[in-house]
Image (tube, rainbow, N blue to C red; front, side, top):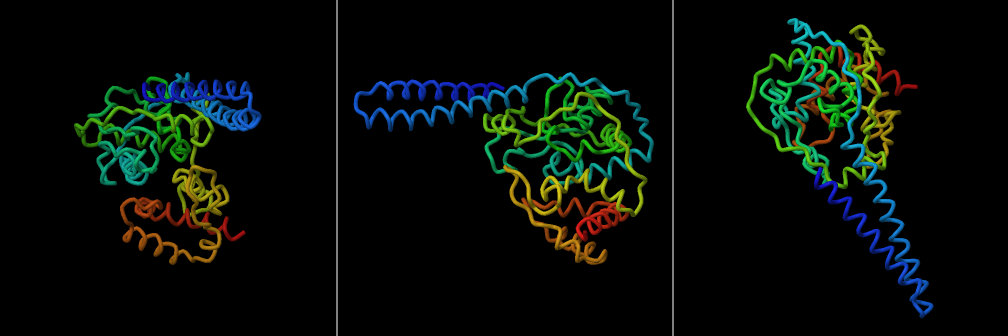
Length: 316
């Protein structure tokens, strides 16, 4: 928090200094100094004033307390839940919460480095039973997955993981059941320290930090090879976060441009789609943006349902 506040103070200081220079230029006796200095210094003053406002809004979003009531949750921890939770963890959680991209979920690398931007220290924490989850209730864990709000009521990086928020109640409970009984690994990750750049992005709305007022019920369609279930898979995999709402590659910054999937997927048969996923998963290189390895971990029903939905949508 200190680093973000310090960055915000620096923006305020620059705005004040530039404002003073603008005023001084306006009082200059020479016309060319007066007008060129006033326009130039005034423009920079406005820019830094805007950055200061965005930084203040973003800092507030990052560190305010969100009063999201805890849901009524009963995680039974059945063998079926644990198995489903392990599968989901292998598909969704290891990308951030593991250095190797494999279980256990003992903590990951700095997500700021993954983004290639100086967003601060954003280490995905250890979420095995030896980590912070040992002191959290099932309700607090459920709220964290669904909304991104932690046990202290503050937004976390999970707030921006839109796909996780669309997991059904049963799938979230399954994840919790798995985390509770997974192998405990003693590993500490550095404290989260967002930078002023992250605050600016949050203030400008470029990073989603829209915490819902309450934890709502989410249900999934019956698991089957259907476009309906495929849409559910597409949503929790957050394919549209990279490829755009219409899967045409059009996404707002700071997200990098992504391929237009429509002409590609509309022409692929199921066998071609399956082989494409498996081939790219085998050839995937470290740091590759497209998570082929994790898409390939979807089970056969999930993957074929995803294909059914993608093919149906992109063929229109």
